[in-house]
Length: 320
Image 1 (spheres, rainbow, N blue to C red):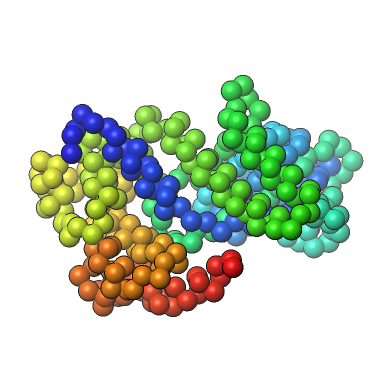
Image 2: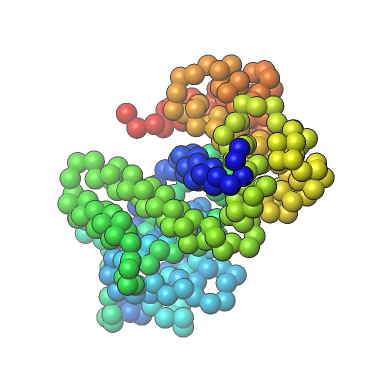
């Protein structure tokens, strides 16, 4: 691998994004009049689109709220409890309880709050189809893509407009289209995050990618899962000492090289189990396991179920 050639970084990002598989759904379309406040408990990864007005988002454990305006898209990546409201002093109520007490219109919009300034939201959830995806280890708790500032990305406006059009149109298959568009929004948000932080991150996965040695090690692992990697063989490829490589990898990535490799392999296996009819022996070999028995044992330890049961459940849930 040519040290001066940084094309491997693009390939690494491509591989990471290729492995993103989500199941998204819109839960609520509230229209609030000030004063208003809603509380969302830890229900997994959540997203919000501000289609009109403005509000504040307060993450649990974070003192300073984030200001959101019309056109903004946010993802609470780790599913932390959070509050949305018109002002910091406004009390918040549970959104699920509020939604049950309100009657939605034909477009699933429900109205609540006072008689002040209006804010309209689209609120939903996202679930990774494989909990082993490396994204979960390095994403910030909140992804915020601004929609109205000068130079705002065109894809955000176009995609959110498409989502709102589908929600308002009531056409057959609208829910499925909206869920797919929400997945696209998330992937685009990841790309924006990479673009903004790849060259400035001082710690974590993005800093590891920028490092010539550890970044190249990540590229080797992502690009050659089937290889029987060891810490020694990785260090040899990078022409560094074993101890120095292992220490630096753990410092930047946050876990030992072979732990990271195992998560990659299990994630890749999960993708093939739900998207192909490949035999377990083929998947085991492609993801670096010497035998089906070793693959099954590792998969069950990390996913809590056998590959066969995982495939059966995912296939049953797959849209026809």
